[in-house]
Image 1 (cartoon, one colour):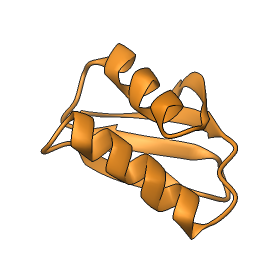
Image 2: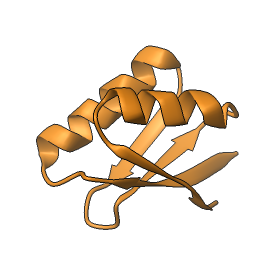
Image 3: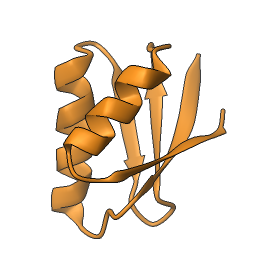
Image 4: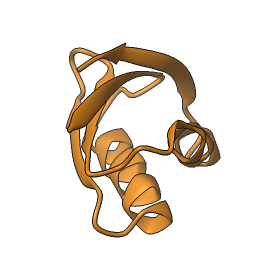
Length: 69
């Protein structure tokens, strides 16, 4: 099962890499797909929303909560 979350502040591929790296560092094995244009991140194989929020915020971006999925 995957879930999609809103992430604000991503403007470039470096931002995509930062968010991806932060989430995979916190949850090795998580499947992460970032949509830069849509301002979302879809994560598979992970259920801990609090960990996602913390990883996104630690990477310097604003976590916007569950979007869909």
